[in-house]
Length: 373
Ligand SMILES: *Cc1c(COP(=O)(O)O)cnc(C)c1O
Image 1 (spheres, rainbow, N blue to C red):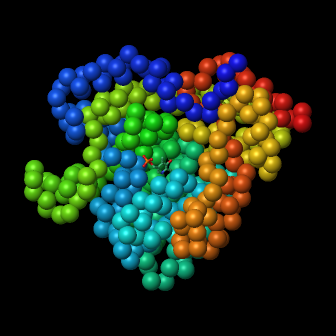
Image 2 (image 1 turned 180 degrees about the vertical axis):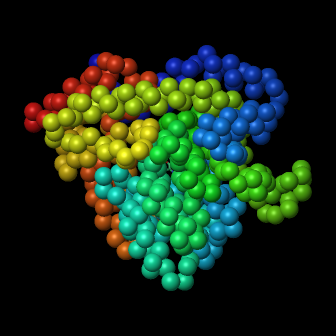
Image 3 (image 1 turned 135 degrees about the vertical axis):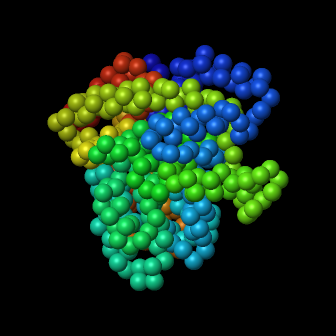
């Protein structure tokens, strides 16, 4: 029997092969390959999906974050608060614009930014260098946006969302992406909405910021060949946009399938020894990852591997412990202790919409076997 993979973007292509191949053929025949009608249509359709006013297609999720920061005038001398338990991209993007990250600890159950540690970091920031706060909606679950939003208003900071793992998630009826001035979305192949290559998008309901970002992503052009300000090249191409339109039409169904798989795993975990992931009250969790927490993680991973169940660790080393960042990035007062514990204990089970019922049953059986020791 083939092992059950933890993730498999190829199966997602094969599941929608006809529609994707037709979209690719349409673009190839059109003769227009970068920033054209497919991109404009995808921007409109994705913005509508997350109830934002504007979408700006860009080259990657990392670029989406960096462009938002540049668009808000954040750069050298400024600080941006985010988390250490995330894809390193969240932090790399802050340094791309010359700003300095401040890494806030996480809530141990939700794995997202701890508003208590954020409050302490903001209180300690006497010179008001923290200009923006960027929580990450990790694993598909919204961060504590109520408390974080209130702190941003009190301290006059921009609220930016790293929504790269939460396409379609919501909290108290507000879709993720609607809490801050802008949201960054990676569209990397394994995300809930994934291209077949690199891609990203910014959403915002601020028309002036949207207009500035459209210029910044292409050399600062508002008119062709005229750079009003210095920009970059971070464009979305027509092939990726056409593929993303096919995938976007299936995103809600894909998220529903992820939630159904999560419910089956929850049932298999009932009775221990590992607790299912917590759900924030009022949240629609879209299960980019289904993550359990095991103090003996490496042994559990090895046993699941023997049972033919693929797993992965998101992420094994918090950003502030990575060689490139250790000892030089600022931490919040909690010193990221929960982030370090999470990095030692988290384990991601197989999770993508195309898992079939038999594969899900095999994972559930292997989880039940863990209970028998
Ligand atoms: C994937 C991801 C990114 C980076 O996106 P790229 O498209 O790979 O640049 C940023 N933040 C989070 C939370 C992510 O999961």
